[in-house]
Length: 200
Image (cartoon, rainbow, N blue to C red):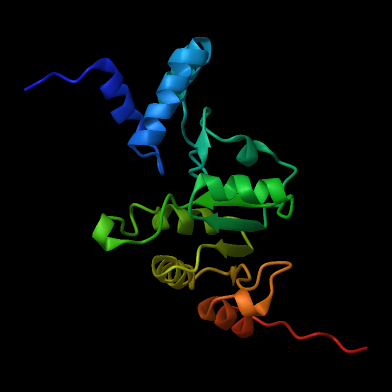
């Protein structure tokens, strides 16, 4: 059997990234080899450093180089509210919106028995312990997939005995969206989550 060349090995390695097929992987490698070898060296060095040095925050489970992430170290944030999200990407998205000034808890996925993710894997016990301190409101910012709905339900049940209010982010029609282009499931969520307009 013919041994794989280094080029083939690197192309295969690039394919570990989501959405990267053989052609995209080949294009990326050839670009680095032909036009930006220094960029390739820098990328390789930083990737190795990131994999070795970035772990998880002991408090919220977000990615962090330190024991506690920058957000958890920021004492100017509101300690009463805790936003529960699926991934670190969700934390980044909410932070970029500037709409939330509390703290976070990252599940690192949703409940999915098929994929071997149960309550322990998403850190439900850790979350309950975190909420038993001074948290007053838990905001569930979890996707509305089947797994997301099951996860939100499981977490709300696990927190029932604590004196915290549990809310879920509104889900429905995007800002500027037109009803005729919105799918039925999204419309159902939007109608069920409607808010009363105050009439003066």
